[in-house]
Length: 171
Image: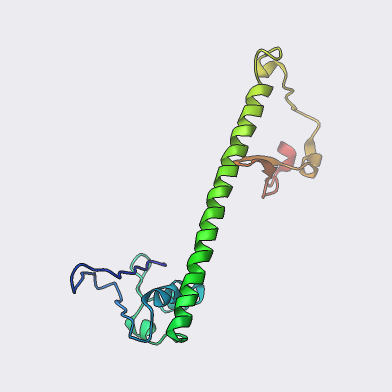
């Protein structure tokens, strides 16, 4: 479930955790953040996920599954280089995510402005919707299934994922 925590500056010599937590302390051959990144990797998460025991909502990773993981241990300077490279990439991804959110918000605002302008009552005559719609009550029959069916989504209209029901001719 990717619930990991790295504590590198506890104000005391001890901490407190539930029995559901596996406390892992690096030796002198490991950098704590390198070990943390190892546990966050997709391969490790999926490996540990396969070992979970218990029922839904109460699943736990057995201690033996954690102890039996195989960890590549390069020299300390290489571990540090890896940690720094990943931190740089994370910062780049975060900046890109922020920039894309700004663009999405700008596009959404531009779309709303366009819609507001298009449907501005000053620009054109307004009529009741029922006065300009046509209700099709006959003539479709068996050919109904030939027509694409659209549904409303957050992104606009999209083709329906399901076909017309069992009795398409009723529509």
